Each structure stands twice: as structure tokens, then as C-alpha cells.
Image (tube, rainbow, N blue to C red):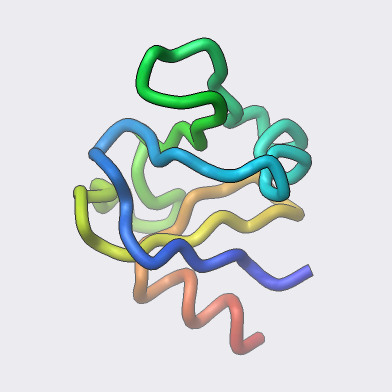
Length: 82
């Protein structure tokens, strides 16, 4: 499965997701629930798995559902093209 692109992060720590993305988030060990702001969140506070770049609010990022890695725009788009 190709990495999933998120158009923009909600914050540097997590992004709210819909129910359809909970399965890849659980498989990656990145699902957060029970927050007052919403029902499901993808945790990405560790940044890009390749270069360590922080995921910033308003910026795109990727989740590789096969590895569970968060990727920055550069590394996510490159992996998606592989």
C-alpha cells in the first residue's frame, strides 16, 4: 500500500482523522482517542522517520501504513513514487 498523504497537520503532535483511517492508525500504533477536541487522532509527534523533520501545523505529511512511519513531504512523496 502506498503512503497516505495528509494535506495539512492540525498541530505538531497530532491530526484529527476520520473513522476510515483508524485501521491504518491502529496498525501503525499511532491512534489516539478520548480527546475533547474529537474522536480519532493520528499521533505524529516523533516527526519524519527518515530525516527527523517535525510535522508542522498546516503542512502536509505522510503515513506509511506498511511500516507505521511518519514521513515529511519530501520523503513521503519519494516513497509514494517507488
